[in-house]
Each structure stands twice: as structure tokens, then as C-alpha cells.
Image 1 (tube, rainbow, N blue to C red):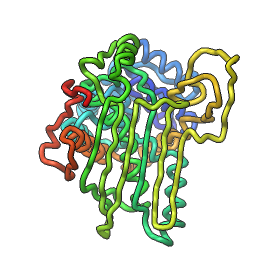
Image 2: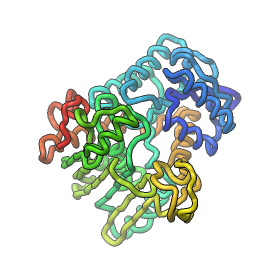
Image 3: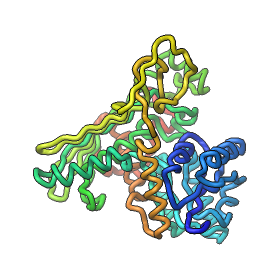
Image 4: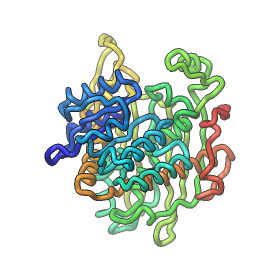
Length: 412
């Protein structure tokens, strides 16, 4: 620990790590001091970006073990690829248990793992290490979500009854990196990649503030997956050319929806409806949320921004993402998010976990939450494959791997 600040090391140097670095400008009491990536050049560039943002005097490390052993590293943010998640966690725990480092805590990006077996291994490893642990689910820390939940429960629900239906969606036109598109590496398609967000934010909104996660219980899951856009011949060619991914022979779903039936403490029925898509074309990433209660409703859409910019046909600049994540156009009336890292929840999320680790306090959003989300995701894949509603939790869930993740799904 440098002075009173925690020293943070990142495993991974890609898109999500860079989002965290942007968010870190709003984080106190912790400095980003290390970056590890299998790609040394990427690690060096990301460390340089951290220094440029003045969020910490970060340096690139040659291995996870070297970073854990560095005396300035107190906590780790695990943001590497899904197919390396368990391997990276094993390396962290081996280093800690062998006395090479003295970590306080670890925070893991979503999803916790590619399947339930891997998720249980992640939990087992963190328990063996004795580390504090957090599950990085940014959407439940988004200011519009947390403030909306606070007001809804303190005013509306307190007077007329708890909310009973939450609808959540995350949609964009597709991932940045090739491995996200490959079911065997990522663990599936859009369902595994993005429904983890929507399920958790829906559950979060229906849970009374201060009540444990177990106060509402999942009963059954009904789901559907499809490849609506990216298996079309012209888009198969685009993916082959831009990502070197073959969706003709091994597609992954670009659309998924699920309904999760819950029950509350008094055995009242609750429902979470979620939709996710890599086949949405709009201004950019769209996060939407709706909650219904007896005499009230709540709604949020990330593209309903307070700032909009109109660009005529004569404005012919280069393509980019300077207005909104996953931006699809550079002309017309475009929404602009002034601080995406804050509005998506990264800033509040990182502040929360830093404070928990600094105080020696186990975060409420933990690896156990990541495990339950993985169980719900895999149950959703089961439901989609069998085309029926599945009671939670089904037999065989611990060893189940979706057809998409095995390269055996044919797109329907």
C-alpha cells in the first residue's frame, strides 16, 4: 500500500480494462500501478494510458506471478479473456498461497466464468486464498439505476407494495474483439456475453434495499436464442474479413431473450424479462430498463441522453466511438454521453470495491453472485436448446456446456 492508497493491478489490457482506467479518474484512495497481459505491447500501451490519465504510475509486468509479488500491488482487477479466467485465477491464488504476494482482494469482471463448473472453481479458488472478492457488474452501480431504485422503494413501494416486474435489455451491433464472437472461447454468444448484465440488474431492482440476495428466489427459466443477422451470407463474409471468424460453420447466437420467474419472501410471484442482442443497429449501445409496481413504473434508456449533436451530410469525418460506445454512424442526430464510464456505472462500481477492500470488508456483490448468474445463464441455454421451460436449478447443471460453446450449434 502506497501511503493510504491501495495499489491496483489489472490482468488484461483490452477494452474493458481501458473503460476501468477512464472510470478511475473518479476513484479515490487507490492507484493503478500494474498491468499484465500475454501481449506485452498491449500491456505497455495500457500502462502508458494509465499514466497519461494520471490514475497511477502503472508499469507493465511480464507475468501474473511477478505482479502479485510486487510489494506495491494490494488488489487485482481480473479483466482477461473468458477462456483464461480460471487459469488466471489459479495463478493468482498459487502466488498468494505460496507467500509471493500479500493481496487484500480481487474483483472479477463479468461473467465470472464460461459455465457453472468453471464458476464453481472460481469460487473454490477465492475461498482457498482467503481474499476478499467482488463481482464487477457495472450496471447495478449506474447512477440512474441506483437512484431510481432508491426512490422507487422508499416512496412508491413503501406506500403501495413491492415491484413485481423488471424488464432489462442490452443491445448493440457486435463486439470489438474476435474472441467474443467464438463460442468456445467466450462461452457462448450474446446470451453469455450480455445477459449476465440484464439478469443481475433485473434481480437488483426487484430486491428490497438491505435485503439479502436470497430474499427472492428463482423458480424457472424460459429462453430463446437465434442468429438473426450475422449468419446471413453477406454478414458471414464481413465477419470472416474483419474478425477471421467463420459463422457459416460455427455460428453463435446474436439474439437472446429469457423470462425468469422468481418468488419473494411472502411467496408473491415476480418476473424478470431480459433481451440481449448483437443485431441491434442504432446510434450505439442501448441499455434499457423498466420496472412495474402496483401504482408506479420506472423507465431508463441510455440513448435518451441530455446532450444530442446534429451532423449534416457535409460532416464526413472518420468512423469512431467518440459520441457513444459501439457507435454506428457519424451523421444525423446523435446522442452524446458526456461521461460513459460514470453513466454505465464503472466509476461508482470501482469506488465501491476500492472502499470495501480498503476497509477490509467483504463486498455485497461477490463471486457467489457471479456463480448464481452463471447458473441462470446456463439454465437459459438449456431452455433454448430444449425449447421448454426449465425449473431452477436443473439436474446436470454443474457439468453442462451449451452447444454454442462446444461449436455444435447450427444457428436454429
